[in-house]
Image (cartoon, rainbow, N blue to C red; front, side, top):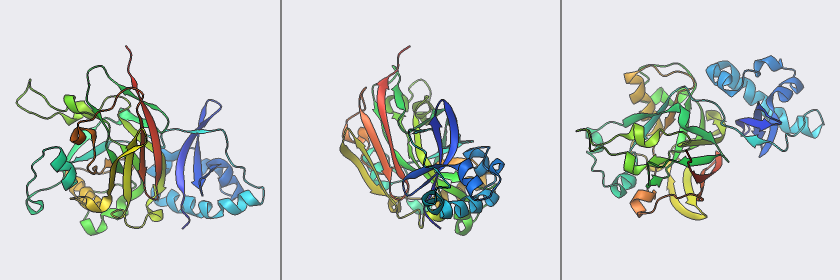
Length: 308
């Protein structure tokens, strides 16, 4: 299977599903037509393809294998002068907290032994998602805005009580995610519950994602991916998914014991060390973040002060 990414691109005021092969963007409907596939099969967008991933995934892979040859023969045009939108709208966003030992240490989080614990998962508002190139709005309520590069997992089938050994089969695709966090809003003093991750992480624009979705079949072992984040050109995070406390498969299995997972559900799987709170450095208006994950891609977002 050739590496490919499912994208949603914007051009001339409209949004369209696209396919990225060898860093080149093609219109998915035009590619389908060139492959003698009914364009209606892809007309619903990336979200619809994820919803029927068992059928659409193999079809997309077959078309991706033909894209370069079709372009070379003049039967498929390259999409130019386009920008990337959010690849798809997640159905729900689950996020795993303190899933790297060194990150837990820098945050001052004392963890139980792995043998005595389970993943700690909270929910983040699906409305927080923005595309690469879009601004992250810094609300006036916070002065401690922070970054967290994370491997994003897109669920591709309905499942419940999934064994760890079979959990990766539930994945449609992977993407890059930046779990923006207002650290001073993650804590509460007005209630006996000291943490409020939902409030600190769910503001609009607090979930940069993209630039596309890379099907699971294009990524070998999800626990062997380098991940990094730089602010204004300075590398802040440089880690690997191999350092996770609970693997991607373990997170899926854990979640599926609590509830039914559906196509389009999204899991942000945790961040390595190097976040701003651990360094005593926080984001400010004008800062530019570049988050990258090996074999997936890169997203760039600039912080601006929200005005009201």
